[in-house]
Length: 309
Image (cartoon, rainbow, N blue to C red; front, side):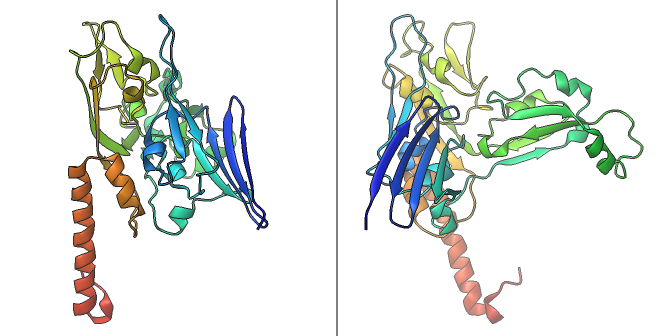
């Protein structure tokens, strides 16, 4: 069967394609959303993704690494697109966005658990400066049409209703918005939990490379001692800081859990082993094994194989 491999790149996008007789596969990286982190590279089973550190001149700020995709190695499985916390990767088959490993239930999707209660926002929310470090939040006044639809519910509320729209597909759940908005208007559960430690004894004097490339405002900050510190509340543990750090061992990153949909097969286990610590991976696999064992016992003991619990 005829096959053609293509690779195109501009300032905004990188696309690799595999064109067969009846199907056309494409993987696109949105450079404007990509932070240069290592998560897609770590998870890729074919080692088709490479993260390249950009050298800097003396006196320059550090630049985020760039991600490259090998068009000959990519199998368009969708693991990279399903695991990217920033939604920077997209797989298409014949022009339609798909995630083959998710559709085959061999890999999970990240769960972006975000609750918004716009009724807790008043006009002051319109003045919140940079409500999202990635520009994913729009705060606006309810339109007359929306007001008319909501009127039966809020007939007694006369002041203008402020709406909060979040582009959830690209949200890494850093919880910055949760802190900035008042009265519990937004609640966010982190996708990735972990530990990021900075050995400040090893940090080169005056080096702020990790701070320069961190995509989340407030996840890293410069304290009065002139050293970079970690705010675990906002860190999404993407790993871009560790990539650019010039000193081996100055940054230690450990992912302890990933909030994802249920799954069936072992493709995720391999990715989990690479992405998280051995201890935490063992905990998740042990929990999953216990669940399977319980379900197996229930099928044997209960009529029709269903649980009464």
